[in-house]
Structure formats: structure tokens, C-alpha cells
Length: 206
Length: 143
Ligand SMILES: Nc1nc2c(ncn2[C@@H]2O[C@H](COP(=O)(O)OP(=O)(O)OP(=O)(O)O)[C@@H](O)[C@H]2O)c(=O)[nH]1
Ligand SMILES: [Mg+2]
Image (cartoon, helix red, strand yellow):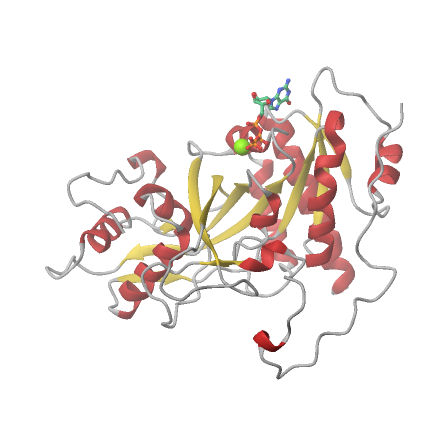
């Protein structure tokens, strides 16, 4: 680890400090293909300037000819943007926007584990780039909603046509949004929360 | 114009093939390399290869709970310094410019030495409970 004492680490700005009463964080993951607007969405609702965290994945010699001693491992760094919304003095919501190769997102231990749910952002000009991630969320049982980021020159499909193209069950919400607008991004998150709430209600009827 | 169509992989129409019988030496199976390339990747724990790690989530909030001991390493003292107010592990990773797993190792040491306190994440169970979801909705509405 090359961590030099000499370059001072800048921590959060004073105005970015959480109150001492803060006791719990929850997270939502924003997924979708290259350039669909994930980072823009994180930035538009975050109360802090979005930050980046990273994880290192190493190619291990499982099922591969691996000569001991010769270090032929390849490391891949996966970075992730995130932002923050203080919900109450105790509760903080974090939004993670996942760039890069989606197969790595699911290897990041603890990214989807414990997440409230996910938002799948779509660009209708390149719908197919999101097919893979939808399949992976289904396999993992991560609840999600679909948000269509409406770029001006993108085709507009009726929601039911999209639903059938994406082969999604009726109960999964599909909404349109403009991720550059805070209110629009907030509404997407509200849609996810209402959906999660309906799932929780179905599971444990009051 | 019609959109491209996704082919659903899950739930699968056919059940997956049964797993290989256990107990065989990996080398004994001279079969083709694994089909799934992502199986080849694991998270690296750079500093501690096989120690117990504290159950730390990206959104676990960490706060310094003691004075900086003279024996602290530069990483430890940087971490303690930025955690004077509660900070998530993700933010610590971002500010220290260290991978998440490396921060986890650092925090495991600092937790053992009782130099920091970890505030437990709420969501330990598979699904969040309704009161938590309602609190989040309430907070978002104010945004
Ligand atoms: N017109 C329009 N442009 C947008 C919208 N959302 C994002 N953009 C632009 O599209 C580009 C990509 O947006 P990003 O937020 O970086 O997308 P991303 O999903 O984070 O991209 P990667 O991390 O590279 O996968 C940027 O130049 C944005 O300004 C939108 O709603 N409308
Ligand atoms: Mg991005």
C-alpha cells in the first residue's frame, strides 16, 4: 500500500459532516448501461458532491494453470460513484451509481447485499445494453424499478410495449425521468420506495 | 418502430444441471475451463489475507471513539482524523483513496483496538421493514 504520510488526506468539508446523531446508513444502487445517466442521477439528488469509492478484484487461479511464485494475477479496479441524502438526523441514504462492466458489480461483496433495492436506468436508443443487468437482478432477487431517461432524440415507446420488450411482470414500475432534474430523480426513488413498500406489505400484512 | 426484446434467463425454463459430485480433486477434472469468466475473480484483501474481518458494509457509519495513539500508522491516523463526525465506509474509502476491502481491514484493526465505533446498518435482514421504508419516503418527499 503506498500511502504517504506527506500528502495530507482531505476529509469531508465541515458542511458535509453528518450530525453526531447519525446512526444508520441504507443504500440504493443505480444500474444501467454505459452513459445512460447514472452519475448524473446520483449528482442531481445528492447533498454532497458525488464521491468515488473503488474495489480491487484479482483474477484468481481457479481452474487456470497457475504457477506458484510467478505472480500472474491481474487486478481490476472497479470504481463506483455515490452520493448521499440525509433522511433524518439518524438515517442516511446512499446512492451508488455503477459504471463500467456490469459483471463486476455483482462481485462487489456488499454492494447489492443489504441494499433496499435498485433503479435500472434505460436509454431507449440502446435498450439492449440493460438486458443483462435486469437478468442479474432477477437472479439475485434484488427488487428494482425501471426508469427511462428520456434523451431528446431517443425513441418513445408506450410503457406496455417496453414492459413486453423487457419481459417484466406487471407489478414492476416503469417510469420516465430526466435525471438532470432533481425532482425527477427524486420521483424515481419515490417510485422504488413505494414499490418496496408494497412488497413489504404483501409479505407481512398488517 | 419496435424495441429489441429481452430473453429472460430467470426463472429458467430448464433447471440448471446438477452440481458435479463433490470431493474430487480439482486437478482430476481435466475438463474445459470454467464457462463463467467472472468466477475467476475474487475480491483481494490487500493487507490481511486470512484474518477475521468485521462485518462492515459500504454504508456502515464509523465514528472515532478515542484519541489517536502514538503507535497509529499513517492510514489509521488519517482514518481517525476524518471520522471525528460519523462517516460511511464508502466515504472513508473515497477520502482516503483506498479500496473498500483495504478500508475494511483497517477498520477491523481499529475496531479491535476500540479506537472507532461502528454504528450497525439497519438492513441486516433480506428485506427492509415498512417503518424504515416509510421513513425514507418521508425524507425524500422533503427533498
Ligand atoms: N439530454 C440529456 N442528456 C443527459 C441526460 N442524462 C445524462 N445526460 C448526459 O449524458 C451523458 C452521460 O451521462 P452520465 O451520467 O455520465 O452517464 P453514466 O450512466 O454515469 O455513464 P457511465 O458511468 O460512463 O456508464 C452526460 O454527458 C450527461 O450530461 C438526460 O436526461 N438528457
Ligand atoms: Mg458514470
